Every structure is written in structure tokens, then in C-alpha cells.
Length: 396
Length: 142
Image (cartoon, rainbow over all chains, first blue to last red; front, side, top):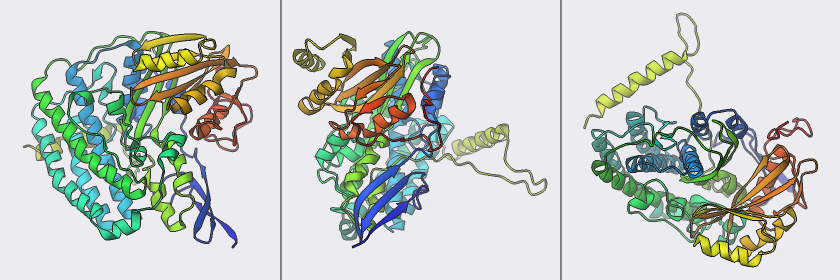
């Protein structure tokens, strides 16, 4: 039978992501997969060398639009490792709350997209509906739905006030019945079983060979999770479990993410309880970064984020290295997609939850003057007004 | 746990280790000569179950420095193997034949710092566009 190349990308028809997958197929079977990337390369490591450490944390927050707090957490961990800084306990709880609420909205986003990819649009609509309250809480406590700017070396930038706590508690409690529904809709549905079980299998050996991380590794029975392995923030101070599955197929990856959301809720509640008891400073007030090198990690929704920083004692890094989880996970498609059918390729490619930026902005046209766009000041004003409105609506 | 890992590496490569720097209890840096890197990487990956988290390339002006960061997940330890190579002719043996996951890491360092990884199965560009000029390396300091 003749071999054919099916190009997927550079603009992925479903994921709106600039990445190019070249599938070499014979009939329905995928024989080879070639991945081309770099369409979105912004040279952030190079830019970091010209920014002060304070600015670097804002810069790395822009690496990703979905897991936007993951890189800042890894960054502050790296700089605190470099300088040997002790962070006040209250700030640790706040870091974990922000990290876990991000995992909640990121996993819900993936769950919705995965539903959409296999034509189960009800899951898509519902998952994204339940993602909204998480983003509203983010806006209430940080001022932003994304890019929360909460992390700083030695602590956090904003406190979580005691009158914010009931609102967060109510939000995560409200999410529990929705999670139960998704658990049933995915784990007990014979159609989903037929569609996802045994599809796109990644073996334990493949995970080790490719160095895969996060839910991609845990769904293949490799129990790695930076939050447990190399404890940081408040993760060793509250009770929770690492979720693993053995099968390594798309179904197992979905199950891992759904069950992980229950653990995230446990962590958020545990941290909120502690916040009521632990007062004090939220910032160690770090003045300068000494010469040296540091490594920081964070378990992002997609897996381990790895940052390496080297300082010569000035206010800017000499070298700043960033490694995002998708960098290790996307190449595993060469194992999980190859050998399967073309119709399974889309959901398998999506199963590692490749990271894409959601940094698109609205364009506003004034009908009378025909003026397009808004100034920075106008955007800030609109954003502040909306935050105030949300705060008012969410009084508990 | 970190001490056990370090002791085992010291035991195996006592004559080849140039320097050990224990930054903290879970962050250890070990210097090796570039020619010993494949052997050490193979031992850490195959015998000790280390996971290559990533590798960092740095232009130190005199040399190109490469750090191979190995994560030992059961103890949260990171062992970084450090090696210096000549900046005029930056060359080192590829570790991709040992660890499949190193393929992109080495391709990226190849295009951004101009390091030639000998015996890499597929040493083409990863991130830079096709029309980017030859021999122009964005992360070099010149």
C-alpha cells in the first residue's frame, strides 16, 4: 500500500497551537511521526539575561498562559536555593493555594478540550463552565484571571485576607459535585471506555527513555511528583496523595487528571485551615542575590518545571535556563501515536496536554470615532472595575 | 539518601571526579572531564535510575560549560554533572544514544550555543527558523 504524509499544523486545526506534526501513514496506520516546533520561540532565556531578578519573575510568568504561576514558583525556588533564603510559613501556604487552584483550572481546561476532541461536547461545555468560578476567585484574590504575579523571592506579593477564605472554600466545595459528575461521565461511560482505553499507550520503559514527567508519567505507573519527591512550599505540611494509573493509555491520563483535582482541593482546604492559624509576615524582604547557582522545580499541571539560574552577584542573571514539562512530554508521541490509527492520533497528541499560550487580547472598536484598541490605562481601569464588581457579587 | 547517591558515584568514578560541590543537601554539582561524560551519564541513567531533567549550556567567555541535571526522584536530589569544553571548537560526545530524551536538549544547545554533539542521530535545528544565519549563536557572548 502507498505511504502518505498527513500534515497536522503548523496551526493545529483543533488546538490552535503552532506546532507541526507530520504523520507518515499507510492506509489508516501511522508509521512515523515527525515533530517540528519553534513557531512560538520568543527567546525568553536570552531576554532574562537583561532583566533584574524582580523582572525575571514577571518575565517567566509569560512563558505559559495556562500554567502561568508554575514558572514563577520554579523561579523563586531556584533563587531561594541560590541565596539560601527561608520563606515565612504563611507565604508557603499562599504559594500552594495558588499552585493548586491553577492545577484545578488547567485540568478542567484539558478535560473540556479532550471531550471536544472526541466529539463529546457536553463535557467541554460543562468543564469550562466549572472552570470559570476558579478564575473568578483568582481575580478576586490576585486581581487577575491569569498572570497573578503572586510570587516573589522570599515570599508572596499579596496576602490572602481572612474575608477571602470563605469565598475560596465555597468555590472548591462547589466544584466537588461537578468533579463527581465528570468522574462518572468519564470513568463509568462505556462509550468513553471504547474510545479511549488501549489508545495511545505509553509504556513505563518509554517514560524512562524519554524522561517524561507529570500526569504523562504517572498514568504509565511512574510515581514521580516534585511536590512529594523534592518538597517545597506547603506541600509537605498538608495531607494529600500522588495519583497513579498503570495502563499508560489516554484513558489512564484522563483518570489521573480527574483524580488529581480531588487532591488539589484537599491541599487548598488544608492550606486554608492553616492560614487561619498562622499569621505573620508573607515576605522575607530579600535585598540582593549573591553570586552562585541555584535549581528550582515545581510540579506544574503538566509536570515538572525546571529552572537553573546563575548569578555573578549583580542584579541580573548571567544565565537563566527554563525547561517546561511539555518539552519532555511532546516527544513521547513518537511512541504513543506511532502504530495507532490516524483517527486516534488527534486525541493521543492532546493527551499529554501540550502547553499553549492563551494570551490573545480583545479588540474594541469605537463606532463613533472608528478608533481601534484600548490604551494600557483604559485596560487597567476596565480590569479594576471588573474586579471590584466580582468582589461585590461574591460577598459570602 | 543524597549521601548514598554521592557515595556510589564517588566509589565508581573516584579517579575521574575533578571536583564535588555540595550546594545544599539535595543539590550536588560534580565536575568531570568531557571525555568521561558518556560513561558517567550511562552509569547514572542505567545503573542508578537517574532521570535527565535537562542540560544547561553556558558561555563562560573562555569555555562552553555544560551541566547535565540528573534528578533522583525518590530522594528529591539533583546531581548536576559539570564539564567545560573548548570555546574555539566546542565538541562533545552525544548522550542521545544512551538517553532518547536528550535528543531535543542537545539539538537546542547545538543551535543556540554552537556545540557539536558527536554521533547525535539527528542534529538539526529545533527552535530557530530555517532562514536564521549559519554560525550565529544567540546564547553566545561575543
